[in-house]
Image (cartoon, rainbow, N blue to C red):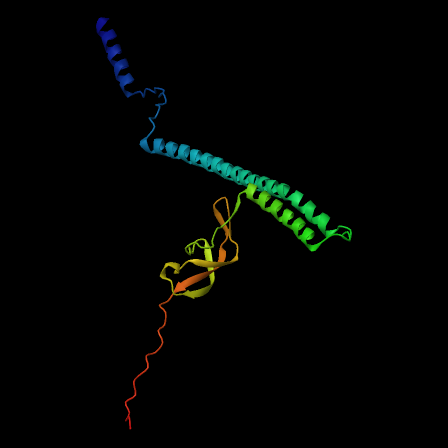
Length: 201
């Protein structure tokens, strides 16, 4: 009986060896490769680059708008300062015929007052006249339209006449002064008379 049970056990064991045992395989989580990590970093950097580019473009447009607005405001301030001068000129242009006792001198005095008012308004805005007469010629501030010869070496390259005034606006050259410049040249001596040999007889 025991021998029969042992034989049965051996047969069952042999049969189990030939049977395929199916085991459900659990999915193995794959570790991310180095390439996947680099691709993810690249995607993040591209996204960051696009965001920065968009922010910079918005900043550039906003700055451009602000500069344009500042320019318009500064021009409006300058025009506002000249309105009083324009009013004075309008009154002169459309004034009634002068009184019989009005003189040319009184008219010139009125025009002079308007000119002074305009110079003050422009000066308050930052306009300055270039002082050129008697100054050494500077090509950064002056434009030579003519020269005048001089025999005094100390006057060489000195501005002797201002033809048109020059101006700067907040240290920016608006128009160079157009000037005449003295140029030194040694005085020309008269030619010496050559003695002519001749007979006294």
